[in-house]
Image (cartoon, rainbow, N blue to C red; front, side, top):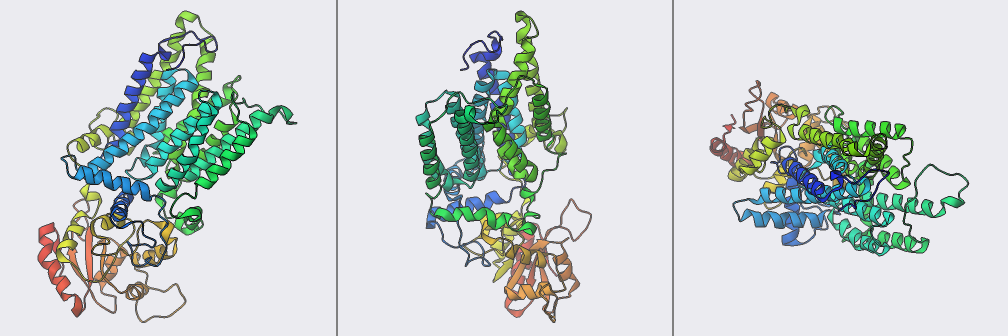
Length: 574
């Protein structure tokens, strides 16, 4: 509970009461559950994450890749292995109940996110001494972070970051004793087995250490900076010991120092980065809430004459706003790290406004924060910039409508994934190696790999780097002319298919590769095994397709597809 102490001349009021705290937490909880407990509709990665958890639970941590034949000789430094195991255990328990496996995973994810934003709400409340401001800040954090509310390991990093942030701020403010910092060492050791977000945790700890050093030695510096010192500082020697122990803790995982190599494997390939959606800059039409927070923070900071930020909160705000502008996936991180600066800044604005009016009317100064919080919450839930509407809470793509679908039993949207394709493959049992694109490989792995098949490639770019991804792009694009300087007697995409001995292909009818097969330009003929017509398209050839190399060895496969296709709503090839 926030103490009812005088804060800058502001008399105690309902906005500081325990009742207000519980009301705010209830509103925040409702929003988090409505936004997070929804069916999976676009995320491909969560499926292979769950399959990895199943594989590790049954076979132990693999040293090399087991899901693809193109990277079977690559070491797999799986930095998320423990979260994957936990995901699978939740799935296994839920799968034996009416809830269902995937809905259990989604619900567990929702509780993890609720824990994250409840911690941030508490932090904002203690910093601002105002539960309405805390509610506004927490809802804005949900609004910005919601685009990464997928049931996969990053949500665990969100919780770990929120807990780390609260701990560091609490020690710096004097709410907790210094010895609580010792918890960071085992927490980071655990974190390195849960998800790669521990690197962000290291950045936060480093920024806090800089603020601690400045607070301790600021009087000796020749230049006096306009920052507010932390009330509580840690002596230099314990601070250094803490840093060393946390650094050692980062190698307390099955892959030790190799986890430091993973970011460079992806970020060092400019072409690869340019093709991964989550590493692109956000579309500001859809993330107007992020834009609102950034511009609002800057404007309020410029016009708040008596507000002095702390180095720690300013450093993490600047670093993570840069990351969020660069990569849409880091909006998730910024939604956590914006909380200290925004909470204290809004509190300063409220206190300044309170000082201008009589004591009897000061409670009304805080009503706009509550009103704005409720408006932002309504905006988030109705999702108007993603084809939702501000007037109908149950219209398609609003979060209440999606939550209702989840409540009624939907775990993921079948039409977004090759569900029927995998069903047919299980019936027809095609022989040999498949070709697939990484955009739907996660679902294929969950359904078929590695018990029956292995994929060509998938989104685990920390294993593949860019090499195999480029080959996949050449095949999927049906590239005819070679890019290796050699001359071939057949189209280059066919050369690559032959090189990997690929016998059947999952693709879309509207893809260049399907057009090449249909045009019959390959030296070895390919036959259409099955086709699912896409009812949303006017093109009769649009939809999922399976093509099979038309050679004697594959005639049984083709016949199986012709027999089984109608059972899965597909048209048999001709």
